[in-house]
Amino acid sequence: MAAEGSAIQVKLDATFTTGGGEAWGAYKQRFVLAAQSDKAPDIIGSGHEDIAAWAAAGYVVPLDAYVKKYPEFSDVIPTLWSATKFNGQIYAIPQDVEARPLYFNMPLLAKLGWSQARITGLPKAIESGQFSLYDILRMAKDAQDKGLVPAGHGWWIRPINGPDYYMYYEAFGGKMQNAEGKLLLDSKALHDEYQFFYDAVFTYKVTPKDIIGTDWNSWHETFVGKDVFFSQCGTWCWAQWTKQYKMPADELWKTYGFALVPPGRQGGKPVTLSHPVVYMISKASQHSDLAARILALATTPQLNARHAVTSGHLAVLKDEARVPQYAQDMFAKDTFYMLGFTTFLPNNKDFGSYDQAIWQSLSAVIAGQMTPDQAVQTAIQQMKTNLGTNVVIQ
Image (cartoon, rainbow, N blue to C red; front, side):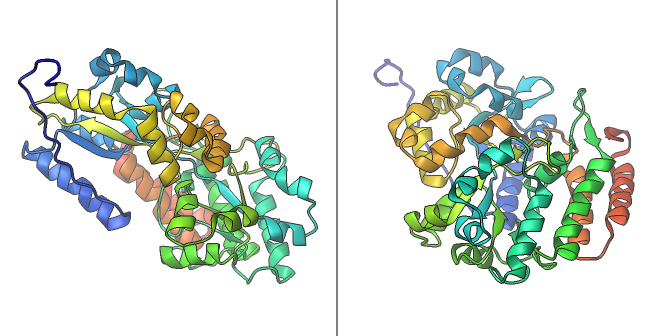
């Protein structure tokens, strides 16, 4: 700005918080408390699902004018803008995005008699709907029966609540929002999802009933120990397995393949789900024009490519995928196509209540505390009580 002859100087003062669960919740709560006191920072980075609640409460401001003003934002992959909107206005700039693949143990597939061509063709088979979620369960049980993995190590899922579980609802045709933007619960798709998890734990017995609550370190160490057949985790896990859990990259590539999450039934559509982390500008900011300019300066293919490659995320910018660092990274390149299949959580201020009802019943099914029928009825009743006419149940 000095080169422009401006007397204004900008000093960046940033805080960084990492870690999920309580740390993530505490970080967001600090912003809410600061916003309620008009002491919020100029820029906040958070999950896109916070946009609705924070915009409705007046904590963050629309950015449509800035998106039009700065050409850097025109490079954002168009589908990502839908995750930044609330009531038709853009409230955020995408900072990163991911997919949530199925990972499969290739040496164990070979021991089940699969040819190399069939193994390498599995992602395409999933993409064309020829391989379903129930094929995972059947093959995982076969692997367990043949002693290739211990009992309960056929298919592992995320051990805590998270967006991942909505992929299974969508794999059976479920949608979270209707055309008018209202929360939507498809009771048949929800039942099919709950039945699938019930079958994984109690019919095929390829997932342990105490998987929910498993320590993340233990979960990852089992994976890098090659002691699980199928699993599902975000693209960022690929970076974690080499950096944090010290699995040599060549060993990781030899052991695990990755693909979209299969459709619920053969002939259906595969799925993934993305949870973009986004930048927002607080209403308390006295310098929103400068904050927007800083976001434009931070939204470059080179900076975003460095973040994506080093953290196991995908490109948020069209030109980012052409940056040599990104284009030469095999994992980033081979998972980029998944964004063509991705969906997002709804930007709806009532989504927290919706999510709580679905998760409480799902975790009860996995723990053996409810049947799928009971779980669906419990979730519906909870939504009727807490959301009333703000949710459409069909």
